[in-house]
Length: 464
Image (cartoon, rainbow, N blue to C red; front, side):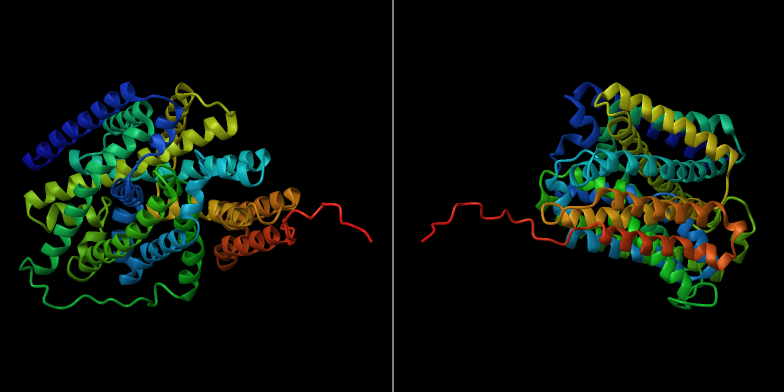
């Protein structure tokens, strides 16, 4: 093990120790279920902005985006461009409305707008899909740990994963929010400094990068699919919407989501340019198994900057996986078991975390593919029906049976398109999630009773 790897490993141990201490401290400060699940619903704009961005910037938006940019070029930027536009749409339409429901989770909003059965149905769909999301983060964590040690070590990977599960289960959402405040500056600093050095650091890169938005590797079909699936998840995903639920009021939630949209747009360009640089000037980066970003870290930038970028990648992974864990566990406890108890949520964090670890160890593959698969189940089944339910709440009643059918049909199309690709042609399988979204939208609109809900005038009229 080199001195560089020894330093990185030492800093990782110290870093994880600090996070564990935060969890222990917050566990003592918890005053009830609300603190544990939604951080007391009292967070300001800056805290919510940083938590949104720390949640979004994870494995897919660092390691995954750079790998994708290396393969297909600058069109890889669309993943986060659609994400930024999804956040913008959320800020302009539903962010404030969601906060005013005083809900604890996204399925809890379904309970308020549709009913208990809708809460359970959405909770089951989210928990199943989010096992894949958490596993994707763990898979990326395994890669960075192997890089730091210079060899693959399942024992170390499991130890680090259990520490993440541990501090999340101790402090809950409160710890997640506090650690996001530390992790986001490290993430942004590492990624931005790396990009600046690669293009301005005297490596003979005077040639400007190619910034085509479409090319032979990424066409209109890919663009349409990501618009619906990825943009939809950023618009109405449980992890991102959970950040609105921790805000102190609706106005704070709206402003925070709007600000996060702008920052994410800039980050999208910066992280994609790192992959484009490697594609043009370090073609050997794609030959190894560690990933392009880790190759750049170890071979293309100075050691001090490499340490900063390493901590940035670790921060990105931890800040996403802990949010996914606490949200999935909160949904499982409150919306499936219907138990509002901190110890129940803690047990759920541990159980879901271990299940995702098993899935990771048995099913390691491309991070973007793993997360896209999970999103392809969630997006068709949840986004359109929930949007219709929220916008119609208090104005137009719903036919619940028809609304449930919209969720089931959309989710079924997502599952078939993700896990039964061998049964259909590749083009048809790729389009199934989009077809599922269109189908769930049409059926959920049919479920609306388009009648005025204004109370009728029942006063007796005077007769002549």
